[in-house]
Image 1 (tube, rainbow, N blue to C red):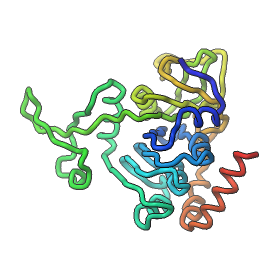
Image 2: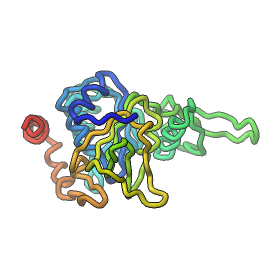
Image 3: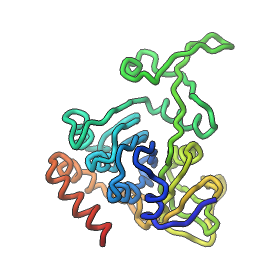
Image 4: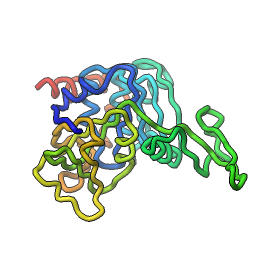
Length: 271
């Protein structure tokens, strides 16, 4: 059953050095506050998984949290590259990280397989792709019923899932509204989960066909208002497009990035 903790307590208790951590949220509800707490606690040697690593993983990689990245697309949406990711991969700063790239379809299927407790995901894909040449986790199998050649990838079953949502009720049930990516599946696939929410309420106010994570599926809930900013949370605040543009300049230079990290993550968290 879900336990209510502060964000600091949740990260300290449930994320260990060397863990495999999947932080999901597609376009909105990206768990920035949780990522910043991981940076502040100086978690190390993490294998980070995310379908679309963007600014939060750029920050975590630049802060030295990651040893490996499993992903299906990486960039600053609408702007360009993730410069801290590129610096780590190309120049080994702050240290070298390993990368393993998939397609979106493979990642989504791998999360769903993990949520179902299956060891692998099977999909039509990767035909004509060069990714199997650089990703040894992509295999091909023959369907025992039709003889069709299909792609297979390991399921994603992380140590910890981290997501952001709009609300949790006092029983520990969580409501996700708006664009729902793979948040539900990653929580169900993970050994442990941390869900940050905008607010804790008496009643979720869930509409018909809403995405509700039941309390039994969640390990820890932490109230974190604006916990997805600079991404957005439907019904609470808009996306800060200006920050995404500004990040390109901040992240290009190591000293500028470190100064931003000091002012906006470490000192902000200490205050």
